[in-house]
Length: 343
Ligand SMILES: [Mg+2]
Image (cartoon, rainbow, N blue to C red; front, side, top):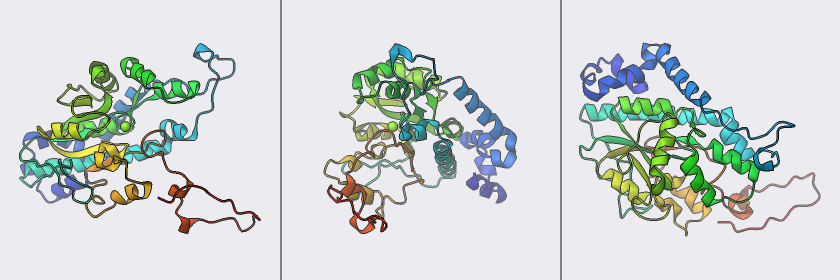
């Protein structure tokens, strides 16, 4: 919105009121034209969320859970991601930043300023990254699906009740049958509306299976995220490359689109290079803060919290707590001895 305010104040908006940008004004300039538009969009998202009531994670006394499962305490990480206002605020913050960023990029394109891709090209390394060329390709924003665009209330609620390890086959069944049991991540509907009205195509790059493309498209649509076309605006595991790596799909998307922003909850949503097996915890944290990458966060790469699952959840004591930061309560007579490597 800052960009729009500056443009409007400078009288520079008139040239932009043609083509795709004109369509962005009613939404993008909501802060300028009044609160009504924002309220309408918030009401729309709330109505969508209320229509998709998630299953209860904790059952009341006397209410037997399905299948005779025991009522279960909700783990703190699950409380945070699926239940807390703090996580919702963080998600809204990220998506507002994304909306502002997309308006700025759309404005740049409209006035002929160069617009750059945020997808690392083949041959890139963490030390020598090279970004895909854009030319005059249409602009796009690429989002991961799970715990980025949608929150999987149904699956995670079932997992809390059942306990035990992650079950890939159960997840596959969830992909096929979970329509209506997810919620849009707070803020995502507003951001995608801004993107589309600014002429930025919304593309999903997910590790859900290509075999379940129709079911996943239905899940996204029912969550209010709009319609997606497999192999154009919906890319899934098996569509390009192999395994859980997403680079090959990003390159396929970049053949048609200039990807100006990406959103994810895992570093692999931005580059597979961050998931190199040889990369230790310390090196991984350092890699995203180098001169090349430190400027990407909130400026093309937008990341959301996920304390429940994924590549963030690793590292023993020695790796998580640097030696120079360790403290022991002086009131205690014994100092516990940690184990683990310091990498
Ligand atoms: Mg994800």
